[in-house]
Length: 228
Image (cartoon, rainbow, N blue to C red):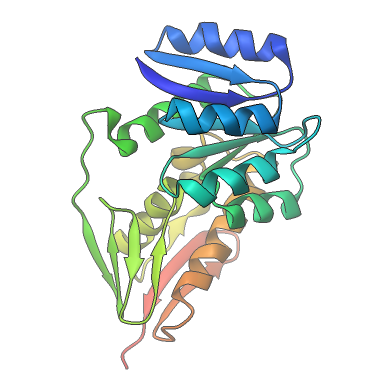
């Protein structure tokens, strides 16, 4: 079974997730605060971490910062009951891979966990796509975006979003389609989350002025590459 670390102060939710995820081949260990969560992380070597923001003592942000100090690769999914844009930005800046609002649909969480389990080497999925974007190269299998002067380790969702923009280069990618394919629905929270992702991708590509992600109001996004 694939080990998951859940750091969440609601005991009932922890037990529900533990019992449910065991049916899908995941072995959930849970801790009720950030301090114990980090201690368990160092000994458990989980393949995925799910962590709440608001907890007694050390909050989720502090625990993620500690985890990322010793492990840059393990997928981290953050849970929150307060979907504020500043929380989204802070979570991604600390290195979280995904962000889910409480209360969540169990099927959605399971789908995201299974996706991360595959890309972290616990399933049969293997991606070998290489994309050129001006001076940048996106390696989807290693989730790395790099050029001669910059190198970024992208999250799974960032890779999937940028791949779709690359594949449709110079044509508009429908926003609702992106939301449905990558987030499962086009609700307000997911819209806000995707805005954060798009801004992060723009920041990554900012050093190459020949590349731009345009917002086509009312439709979606378009990746353009200008001739130098």
